[in-house]
Length: 308
Ligand SMILES: [Mg+2]
Image (tube, rainbow, N blue to C red):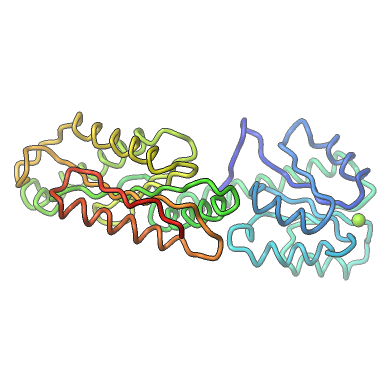
């Protein structure tokens, strides 16, 4: 996906020569948000933190050269699709072949021609936009139009990593419509579909913060990923969602516990550790949801803060 800030895309410039970085900065600063690294290790760290839209990568650098940086990026499931353009003074065809074989999308030769640099970057960014659009379509749930499980799994993975670096807590809300089978049986599947769409839109609106991510996890189950949100913050969000559902007051003639459609929410919060998997947090949110169901539905159950 393409994280845009103020509508500008992000480019990471990697070159061990500060003069090259300066020239590229002058050429590109008006159109893009720019990040800089002067060695391979910094480049990998910054790429992983800022998830750029494009990387301009010098080939010849001490310690870790551009090819090795490229290999590392391609081995990372989150970064592998970020387009890489090599910048190089070498013009031999075989060197270009190495880079292209490693997965680079283009080459820019030094010394730079600013117009060529801008045009090549613009072309690659346009291609990336199209790829992102296709990716986004394949990440949406067909019925509700909100992100699907695949998108949620990726968001969770991404935020888990980000959280393991920032050491800020990450919260999950596992949300399930109460007595949904009874609703379908009594109101029909078309009404059931409408209900799913309404709940999806309500969740999307209640979780207004740009960084919050909500999707349909499967069936009548939804998942919200809340970065930089502690257990108290997650409670506040969950209560808002429950209140919004109450305001909607969708009639549920077959509900054993009232006349309206309600939801149950399981919350899990943790400070992520890189060596562990986000599936732990998912399981905790799921068992909290199970307890919410056991304890009577239309309620929130939270696990204590985990260290996982
Ligand atoms: Mg160099």
